[in-house]
Length: 336
Image (cartoon, rainbow, N blue to C red; front, side, top):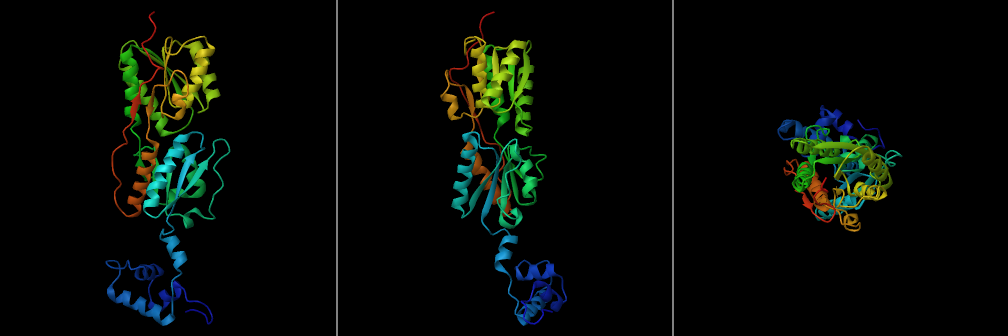
């Protein structure tokens, strides 16, 4: 029983009613039907009345996920893509009375400092990019309602997943370049351990490998223009290629610099493709052939999926379509 002068707790109610604290929580939270008997529920309510018990509503709202705050975990904000993801997620969140806190996990310096004393106690749920999944451990975000973006549906911590149709994007790139007559490819791959980049490599190898007489060499680089320049220049000195397929538009910009440093022309001597369709794609010359990813729709779908999880519903299925945008950086290969 509660000591004189102290506020009664749920444990006091449980002792008075002769039940567990879990049963008290179920009854006072109006979730007892089908789980405890009506007689037990009445006994708990009577004990609470007799003791003058009042639940801590602030703590209860945190435990039950009523802070109406969602954490969006992304890699370092080095491109506008994740800004678009945030914009889309925040728009849908606002429509449902939620706020979105952005949590970047800067590459090279580890996860950003936890913005909450306890993430579990201050959040309703988490939306996380697979590129920043390591940060989830630091904030215990994998123990909250979770939606993973760009993640393997068969192995994403048991979470719901929302994906862009990257496989189809690479298919479109490969068919475009093969249709132009290219047979010798360099894959300028993002040096990031992430499912989405593994998908790109597998699909490109499969599509190109299905055509006789083709070759694909791979060079890896961090998603940074200067690193891409170095990796592309080294690879082009070693391997014959008439087309470079880049995992990201920033990698493509580095490839442009490498090609010109070697005295070659785009697309006359070598074609280049990217992926994302960032503003950068139309700022370089010639404008970049790339796959357009709808970042804001991606964020919207991620937030809608989390809302479904919070409400006990199945999120919408199906990957988000992507589109190849053909510009001036691709052309038939030079005649040999």
